[in-house]
Length: 277
Image (cartoon, rainbow, N blue to C red; front, side, top):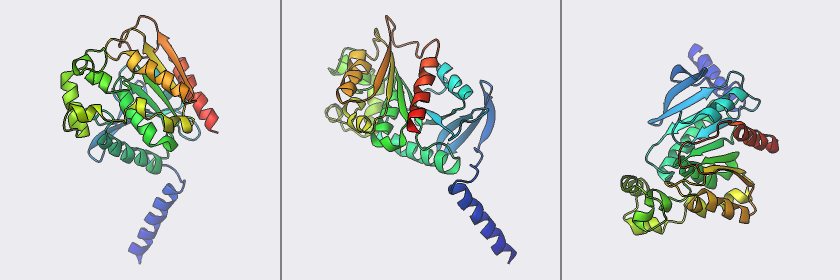
């Protein structure tokens, strides 16, 4: 009888949490990151990081880093200071592939269903991280609040393909191109070149869902040329009627990422959150 009663109590707790009760605490090792509580744990074998704000905003909004957690973090820190959670799932060398998105789907379910974060995260895509963010947004527009890309890779034919592969003006990367072929399961270069699901090719779902995009990039980026990536995406998304804005850094190369003052990035996400209400 006691066992049955305990089981009923446990079931009630699970149901209450699922249906809108108090969110479960984040698991894993706890540490400090720039003055905020950080949690490191695994999701189906992938390393996950969640950083908590000191005072979460209503609705528990969160920003999701596509890659390079901790690199050029002033916008991340400003968002935490404003009450946003920050999250990252380590699936490196996957370039936004379907395999990477399968891991992202599990991570999203965990954060939303178990820990009560908002169903529509804001996405932060630095460099190749843009491939992850835009792949998620195109496949899950109903689960995307807004997208911020910083010198983002928007077409993998441009990088890591580039001039050596006959696609674009950048130097590309032979090693990363080989990694990309493995990540996507392409049998050869020609199959990769024929792929029509690069970010620049999948903008219609985002435009139809009215997902705002912010682009920050240097107009002298030699590694990820803007005419093949951010600038090209800007023109195409605008032609589709999408909401897009950009901050162009004159004379800047691929690094450094971000802005000295991250206020425009924070305001972009905050505006998207207000428009959602």
